[in-house]
Amino acid sequence: MSEHPLWPTQLDQAGRALAAESARYAAMGWMRGTSGNLSVVLGRDPLRLAVTASGMDKAELTPRDVVVVDEHGAAVPDQPGPARRPSAEAGLHARIARVSGAGAVVHVHVLAPVVAAERWPHGVALRDLEMLKGLGRGAHDDVVTIPVIPNGQDMRVLGDAFEAGFRADTPALIVARHGLYVWGEDLYQARHRAECLDWLLRFVVETASGPVGPASAPTGNGAAEPTPVLSERGTP
Ligand SMILES: [Zn+2]
Image (cartoon, rainbow, N blue to C red; front, side, top):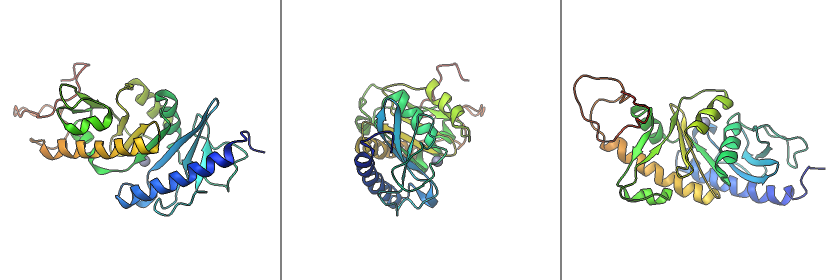
């Protein structure tokens, strides 16, 4: 017996949605080479998420290619479906869902956020852009800084870094040299936010001038950065 009687129905619905969304992202080139993973919250007390299975082509998932994980991202015993492995990244999905209260988390290896983080490693600031409305923020006079955290393989470390910079009004996180996490009430809101954020990040990358590389590094050439870098800690 599973620990939750609603799982078979919930999990079937979640599996269908996760497979369909994964296929969409894969077609966009955002889940190349089995990368990336998507999750939806099945229950909050205790926290349970359905996460896409690890190591599978995200264009070809079936509704059964999901794993139920706990608040640490570990597969729970007595899975209703066939044996599948969760990605190690499921731990960060669970942390994000717990801290933000999101109902769905999307993790994709889309390029623009990684390029933006390379340039602005302390956070990517966005402002005065209509697409910011897609993140639930203002198109004018509202600076939205997407946090950037270093990459790593210990999801507790990444989770701590995420939580340290978490703001309830900013539903996204860039992991440097890795990829993007975006969350929302459900998979559809998360997808729409991810699409808008991709546009926004492409914009700042493509309109930025000056040398490519960490903007915080002193260059000595006085080149102005058109997009402000997060500097609340007085970063030089
Ligand atoms: Zn990843």
